[in-house]
Structure formats: C-alpha cells, structure tokens
Length: 557
Picture 1 (cartoon, rainbow, N blue to C red):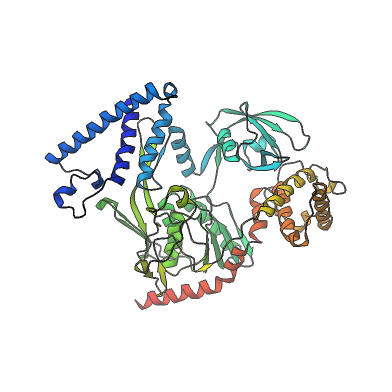
Picture 2 (spheres, rainbow, N blue to C red):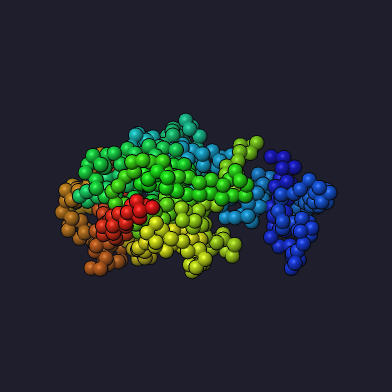
C-alpha cells in the first residue's frame, strides 16, 4: 500500500477528530458557519472553498512531516506496518462518526460478502473453548451434515492442538475459527488430539463453501405451535428458506407461530422486508429510511394481498439488531404480533457498502431507519464510547417526545431499539453453572468413548444421525448417568447439590444430543426448556386478540 494512501487516511482520521473538538462561536452567522471545520465536508464552489482546500493542503503537509518524524525517530519506526496503520486510521475516522461505519481489509470484505450469501469457506465444524487443568483449549462440539469436517472424521470432543503448524493452545475459539477458514479449495492442516484414543493425528482438510442458512431450525414445538429459528441473519436466501419453512409447518398442522429472532444481527434489508410482508396486508408500511439526500429517503410497504393470519409471537433479545429490529418494529406497530423477550440492540443506521480499489471496502452510514409509526430504532451513541455502547452500559429512560401509537392505540417509544410488549429476561449462567457445563463436557467426552464404567451403552463413535429426533429413549439409565456424573465431580474434589440437579440434567441431555443427533436437534433440548419460549407460548392467545383488534381497526378506516 502506498505512503500517499496512508497519509490520506491518517489525515481523514485527524480531520474528523478536529471536527469533534473545535470550539464554535456561541452565535454563529451563516457566513462564519461555512468556515468551521465542524460544518462537515459538503463545500460550495466559491472563494471560501479555496481557503478550505488550502487548509486541507496544510494539514496534509503537516501530516507528511509528522509521519516522516515517526519513521525516523520512533523506537519502532523502521518496522512500520502501513497496512495496519491504514486500517487503524480509517476506522478511527469512521468511528468518530458513528459506531457502525467500518473499514474492511480485502480478506475481511470478502468474508463479509460471503456471509451475506449464507456461506463461508471452511470445514463445517462448530468449536468451543473448555478449560481442563488450567489449560484453555479448543474442541470440536459438532460437525455439519455433508461437510469436509464430517468426511474427515472429526468428532465431538476432538481437541484442536494446532492449525497449519501454529499452536492454538490458550487461543480463543474465534481466533481458531478464523485460522481454519480461508480460500476455497486450499488445504488446512489440523493437529488433533482424538477424543476416542488420546492420540495426536495430523488431518489435512480441503476447505469448501459451507452453507449457513438463515433459518437454523423449523419444527412443531407443541401441538399446533410452529417454531422458526431465524437467528443467523437476513441473507440472500432468507425469504426462500422462510417460505419453505412456513409451507412445511402448515402441512404439519401449524395454527400459531413462534418466530425466534434472538441473536439475529441483521443483514439484508430487502430480505427482512419480505419476512415482515408475510404477515402484513398490502399497503401496510414496513419501514422508512431517511437520509442526507432525497435519494436516500424511501418507504417500504407490503404488497401481500393474502398475508398469514395465524397468531404470532416474536422473540427478541439484546443481540437482535438492525434488520431483525425492523421486522419486530413493523409487526409491533401494526399490532400483528406480540413481542416477547428483552430490549433489542438499537441499531437503526443504514450502511451503504463501498468497494475500494485495493479490494478493501467500507460500510458507511448514509441514513436512519424508522418503524411504521415513526419511531427511530437507533439508540443514542453520542455520549458513549464504543465499549459502553456495545455492552449497553448506559441506562435508558423513555423520552416522552419519542412516544408513538400502534394501530390499536398502544403507546410505544423510539430511540432505544424495540421494547418488548412483555419483558422476559433470559437467565444468564452463573460462574458456578459455567464451571459445571465445563465438567459436563469432559464427562460426556469420556462417556461416549466408553470410559465410564457401567454406562458402556452410551458409547458413540460414529457420525451424528442428523435426521433422527432425540428422545428419552436415547437416555438409558438416566438416574445412573446422574450418579456417575456426581462420582466424576467427587473425583475432582467437588460435590453436586440437589439444587443443581435439574441444571446438570438438562446440560447432559443437551450434550448427548449433540453427539447422537447433531447441533440443531441438540438445540431443541434447550428450546423446550427455555423460559422465554414458555412465555411466548402463553402469550399466543393475547397475540391473536391483538391482531384481531388491529384488523377491525383497519376495516373501520
């Protein structure tokens, strides 16, 4: 990357930084405003522009000299990495504007585009960190159907020791994941400690495109109640996947729906609009977009003349963001669905994607999203640093000026994501529960390899049976299994209390299901014991009444 480009992007970061701190006159005039750096980058073609261009040239010259001094005098100046400096500079500039504008290196940009296509290039395995004897390691917890990992014989509990010759002991699983992913068709070499034998093997796997569907699962949760998990974001295939899921659930007798968009980070707007449109009649506004220029101002409306009429409850949490908030907000404003769970993230900024000549890319905020009632989805970020913003450190109090009305006259508020109609906080794992989950993993690792005396019937060293349901029949002598885990824990100098029995029982069933039936079926074990899902089911009659009231209101209009 050229020094000129580095200078330019450093300059831009510096320029925006100044615009945040320059002291402005208390009573600016129209003339003085055009000279202030804080007024932005939209300049008129006048004599004033020449002064501004001159200022810009002076700053560039100052920065050239500053960078030259860094190169000549800084203790690490001769090892300057222009690519890293460029990335830091551009991101500093963008994050001075808002939290969601970002710069992507060519590799990151390709990965982002792949994710929007519901695919990535890797081996098709799910991994996680677990701690044993003070060592943090990465283990295989599942493989995907028809994946390179499955064909290579990777199994639950296999420990990844190294990737392409680099030790990954003590590394976070996300780091290991990124090391494993790469160019399609290229070989990645894993050093693996087999759970079955304890022996270390080198396994060479050819990377391939791995499909990651938007909908991870869809099934009849209870009699007549369909459940769709749309947690993987809105990608190019989302609408098609959703249509198929609805059709199959209707064929199985669905007369009510739980739509789970918890942890859904967002994605492609048009796909989210199509999902909301499934439940809203023609002419109903789904979302509006307001930006700096008239071309950025748009309204999306439903064109569906035969929308679904079954009652719907939508599950959300603090990680439901962007496009998923658009779906929740549209259905809430039209009283078409009841929203249950936790307050959503509050990301209502529109990012436009820009390709850069080197293969890198930018996502730049160019507009804001509003729900049909006119609520701003984006929460305030002006008074927060990035750390506090992403961790929701600032308490929010509804602003009366942001109040709006739904179709039936219910009051809802903007400026902080989507507030559920019924707030149900998900229980978070305590330190003790995290400790127990860790031990459950290693116990199951021993169990399925026939190393727990008296429970050899649980030995399972073949691939998961992805298409078979997990039932209590899979759990032979379950009381004996619990007793064996208690004994396992006792050997570690610990004791399982009666109060922890239900928690451990659930986690044992979950991990055994991972082994026998794969990740998707295993997640059903947790879903069917999820307090937020239980509350969603209880609210289906209320969702039905609300939708009926909204329909009557629309007819009167």
